[in-house]
Amino acid sequence: MARPLIGISGRRWPASTLGAHVPAAMSGIEFDLHFTDYPRSVALAGGLPVELTRDADPDEMIDHLDGLVLSGGADVDPANYGQSPDADLGAIEPDRDAWEIKLLGAAQRKGIPVLAICRGLQLVNVVYGGTLRQHVELDDGVGHPQWDVDGHRATHSVHVVEGTLTAELFAGEVGVNSLHHQVVDEVGEGLLVSAKAPDGVVEGLETPDRRLVAVQWHPELLDKPDPTFLWLVRSASESS
Image 1 (tube, rainbow, N blue to C red):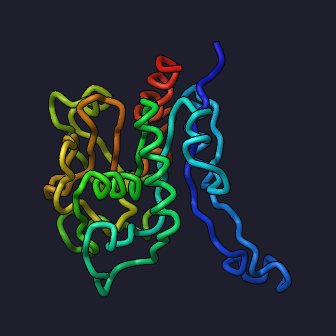
Image 2: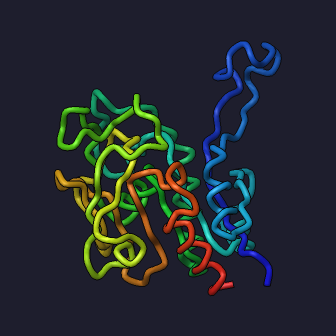
């Protein structure tokens, strides 16, 4: 049996962000950025990873895929959930928001499994009508934006909610990293909260049909193969 094809979203930046590593003549050219732990995690879970570009129709791309990863990255534009920017809002990428919203819609219409990570969880919550708290400080709660700690290390625990799919993937309590400064505020309609930090911050969401799992932490940086990627690849195999 062929391995399931798993698409992974990513960022798009101007080459000028690479500074002296590119000549001035190429500084205005854009490049697509995909952190390697995403495709590596898909491959180690048994899937065939493919890094997606936004230079093709999302529906047509999804038509070729068996599963989708919405990866981490920039803050979601608060205009998507009817708010003005907070003073501590980070960089936003509205073009990426629009692209990934289309990818998510196409994936759900086709019925393929979706794994949403960090920003991906936040985007999913917004798509379902939820809102975000635009900024939390290090001294809020368990200390969520651990920017100075190696992302391969767990910095706090998360409690999974009994009866959810996420609870079937993880036993009771999970040690997670924390590479985000935004959190879920109002949970989107129809989403199930599947995991919480000890301070009450939502760390996991899923849909009742078990076709979407979203986590606030970065599982691709933790021990591999990770249960969420194993679920994604297994579900994609069963659907293909």
